[in-house]
Image (cartoon, rainbow, N blue to C red; front, side):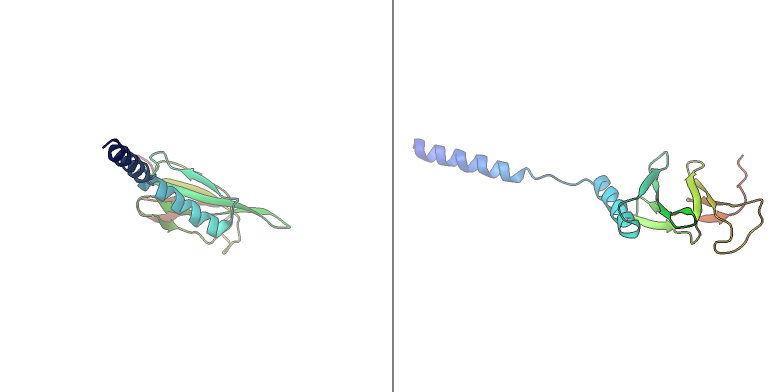
Amino acid sequence: MIKVFALLSLFFLASCGSSSKTTVSDEDKTINSYQELAKEKYGDNTEFQLNDSETYVICSTVKEETRFTYIQFFVVELSSGDIIYLPNRLFRNVRWDSESEIVAQYIPGTPEQTPASNHYIYYDVKSKTESTTKPNKL
């Protein structure tokens, strides 16, 4: 009887140990998703800037050419994992201007020449609109 009890105890302990698998949370999956996407597009040299509520992330990289250095970036909506903004210009810098607005200074002449007074793109992640003029804030 003692042998049966010992065997049952060992079986029970072994089955408990195998069922304690580590699960990956949805948050971890999302983080891995946008980081893997950025690594695929830009390699290991990628920086991430989350907005204050951590609902969107700017994924950017610095590229060095023989004549100048520039930044490329895209924006990911974390709830869906989708790229919502991928501009086709070369930039000097990019940052969050507010909870939902990005401001990026671009290098003039890429891809079109614009007036010298404004070399900024403003992008609103909620309305998904791009503008070369700073939005009015109330």
